[in-house]
Length: 242
Image (cartoon, rainbow, N blue to C red; front, side, top):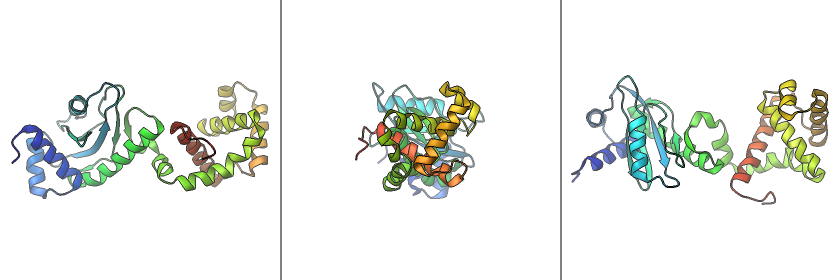
């Protein structure tokens, strides 16, 4: 028998994220917990870190994840993680990380929770703290779950730079900043404190060594994937030879 407020909250959240509550029961129970049955929400999955305890994290999510229009937020602890339903990204204590799924009706929170879980796993792998929106992560969840594809991209675009030593590292940083600066030559040169002609020379050398075409969208996407895979490998403390 469910005989406490925590148990009722946990039952509601579990039923919504698993999609097992009948619509009428979901609406009634949601309303009793401060949620609007016709509202749109997003699932959240958070993990404590440092000195943050699970129930303290759950309280922070519930207290700061609601909306000004009366749509509330509810959070509980399930198997060590904080799981909940929120309207907006909450403020989470330092050291904690939270993944946010897509905005959906109450009946769609099971799919939102799957995305929240992927966001959490990706943020942890990349060493990101705080509340992380699945949309902010772009293709990084796929990079995490497709290691073999990532290795092929690294082999195609980054491994040819290794025999060049320090100059290869310089070229890798150069193309990274070039992509991060939106392919803008002068902006990239400013960030790297080099002359635009020096930047152009480095980009040409990169293309020559890797046979990439930095004017071709497919090559740019694959290069970005390779750079993000390398960043993930570093975050996971993997050696480049693995």
